[in-house]
Image 1: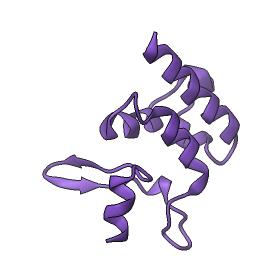
Image 2: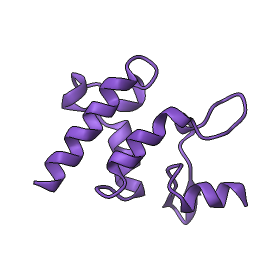
Image 3: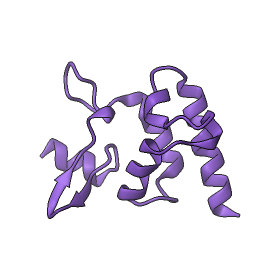
Image 4: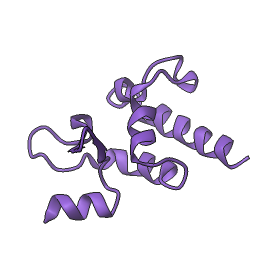
Length: 95
């Protein structure tokens, strides 16, 4: 029930592929398997811009705002830069 609530409230990325639900592990605290709270502002920035598949792809693909690094690789190194990249993406999508 808790996982379903996280999905409905968009606290975690969940998308379907091959008729199965997928939840990328980068978004969870590996010690307690709770959603990583530092990602919430990024999810909030992109929630109205991207669907779940697009959001997962955004984290996985090289990003020009992050010197062509994938956001998922930058989360631990520079969370502020990831958040700024998400803000830039949202701004561009709204133009």
